[in-house]
Amino acid sequence: MRLINVHTFDMENGHEPDGVKYAILSHKWFESEISFQDFQNLKDVEKANMKRPHESLQQNQHMGIGKIAWSASIARKQGLNYIWIDTCCIDKTSSAELSESINSMWKWYRLAVECYAYLPDVDRQDIGSAKEELEDSVWFKRGWTLQELLAPPVVRFYDRHWKSMATKADMASDISSITKISPEYLGGDLRGASIATKMSWVAKRTTTKLEDIAYCLLGIFGLNMDLRYGEGNQAFIRLQKELVENCRDESIFAWTNPDPRINVCGLLAPEPACFAESGDITHLSKKAKQRPSIVWSSAGIRIAVPVFFWDLQNGRDWNNLAVATWRNLDVTLNCWRIGESKSKDTVTIHLKKTKEKGWQRNRCGELSLTRDRGVLKCYDVFGNPKLRVLTVEQ
Image (cartoon, rainbow, N blue to C red; front, side, top):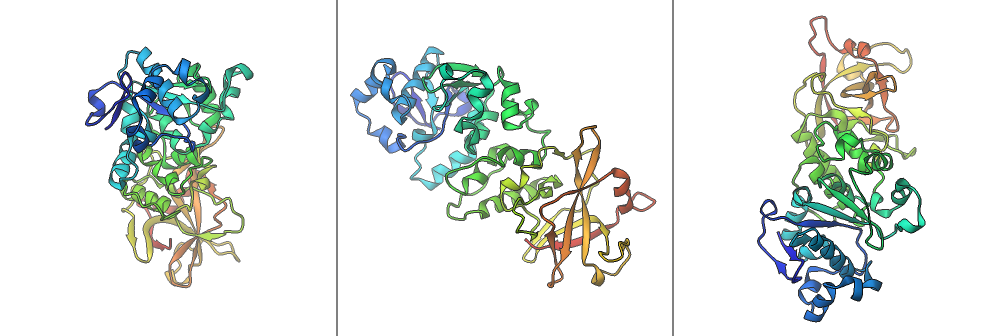
């Protein structure tokens, strides 16, 4: 891990994040950012000016060099010797270093003494309440700043003039209202949040590179993945495959496609926006019925699930019908939507048989809910699940 010495503005290599105290910057990138190569070429006079940002960089406080100088100044006042800034502490010309850094990002933010969140589009003098100061800022709309909000124990927000506004803890209620993230998760302990809930947090955020909407979630899910810039939406599909293989949370299938033109699709969501309405879906491990692991094959996803078989014309239950005659079925997932009355309704998705004898997600724009008494139809009198193994095309 490279760190900037806030006294000399030298770049120091070889630090272990758990062996040194440092601050860390969270910000939206602009074209004027200082890269690793730019930083290496800084002249002594430029470094000297960075030590006096109030005098020499008043007009450049939003630019890359200004952000380095002002955040370093804050760190010095806090008695810290180092700061980490993603724009210049990573050599992004090295694909290996970039991959290692992105996969380590959650840890680096988690171990920082304090995270400085710089909001260049907020001016405290012009705005009233704390919520108004924050909710329109681009910082709350970017993919990478999600983990930068959640991972650090302490996040302090600064306006465009580098004036301190408040900490994450001070404004937990307002931040929760803006981000739709429950206050219990703002401290970084995400173990109680389902996959669908976590996905909903990023559903309305954006990244400059299409692949980064998947890569910015690696730390939140505790995953490591190879970076393949150029693969487009396939990065998000790969992320979901990793999740399916590493956990048994079926809320990953509890999404809806907002595009009314798409009625048939695979079992995995094409993009995080599909989870926008899934924030209240939970996975209860004590309540979940265990099923065989999901298997990936060239034909699609093989999953054993309890199902309701139904006939569009007669509306009858076809649970005992031969496989060859099934056309549509409702699949109950091991996840629940919490209602306003705290009732727990089981989430159901719809599948349709394909000509290739596989299955596809049908009616992708909706999730159905069934009370637990309905789900019992999927189990025999001895409590054993009536499971069917399906291959769902992706």
